[in-house]
Image 1 (cartoon, one colour):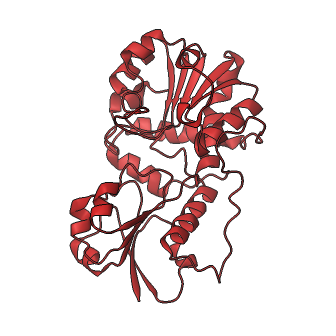
Image 2 (tube, one colour):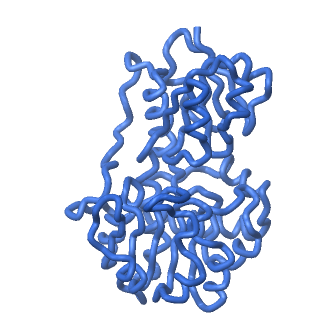
Image 3 (spheres, rainbow, N blue to C red):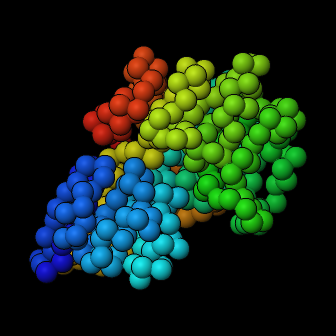
Length: 323
């Protein structure tokens, strides 16, 4: 028998588990007793998986995150504890692409070019949708060998970010955009759908005050986001660019399969669609028109009460849109 301890807000888990797996749920942070009982742990970005948590869960041998990223997980701590880690890269690519198309669509009338910084699953989906809307896109991703230069990124009318948060190394992204970059760039619009910390928030606020338009979905210190930046952003959403009916199901399926806890005999995999990285020859239909209205309503709700409780309430209770 395997005891799986899973975040209460990860849907469809029960549908995929094989016989012999006992499911227990937790909300945001698992308690000590539940961790002691667990053999496997399934989390979202709100749960920090580090050495302290793993020490409190001595029987856990596999940790899964039903997310496309994993900066909330310490891989070194997992390795040191002999714990295998699994996640769901690309699960939310279509949802993020729709988000970017929805906020960038109205701006297309006055702007022509947009840089896509980070062209993996989500960035690739965003780039395809932007081209379908008529934008001239400049895909920028040095690790993938794409030919655009940083100067070409700065020369665009707009920019959208889809990189992981990394510190140090050749391609570190923490603080990638600071005051000096904003002073050089020609951007009139910025979409921040990567990770909080990729764009320096004080510099971003100063740029908005000088006339820039920002659509912000990720924040430093989530769920305690900067209320001043929430007010200044044209669209302010609580890290939901990747939230959709399809993305949630994909994430659950992908991570349970990677954890070895997916019952292949009872249900086939959801149709993942095109989840590959940037492809210069592909295109994707525009998102459904109501996506823009959905995001406007959500942004207004958060701006009206820009606190951590509202951040969590929207993420956990707002009806999911469809891709």
